[in-house]
Length: 233
Image (cartoon, rainbow, N blue to C red; front, side, top):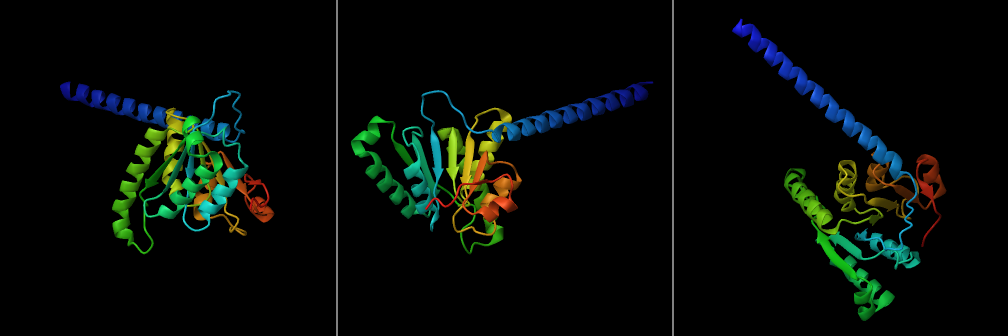
């Protein structure tokens, strides 16, 4: 009799665990679907307050394209601004410093909320072995998590560098968990004429970007959810 009671108790516990697991998975799926559907809607903020903005810079032409984009934005609407570049990319942050100084002046910069300049660890450096990149990837993710908790941006702007992926993934998870809603805007590089970059493709396929913009009409045809905005340069 005692053995039978033990079996029944074990089965009941197992059934409860299964039901709880199914319930949690169901809630997560519903939440993810809600986040994806809400993210597709344009960002409308009736509040006169500015939006804290995280700007991801990258080596090569990525930073130049991003700064050109910032020139046409209502910068007073997107502040404070947090610039992030890879730990080995000092040139991009220097360009961002020059941009901010030319835009507002050092004294005015302090008065309007200012800008901050940060660096983030890369998941993998060029030429690094895949084995050692496992450890650096974990470090990069932990660093990205710390930065996102610290900054808690309302808007994320990125245009291709791989350093944006861990930041965007964490921002998406924060949405799903209800921690913080950060609108992710991805502008594909003008150099991408026939297909999206790996960063753009990941954000597009995983529905992480709230809005994804392309600068060539053929990309709009290949990726219907993207928005064609013409050439920004």
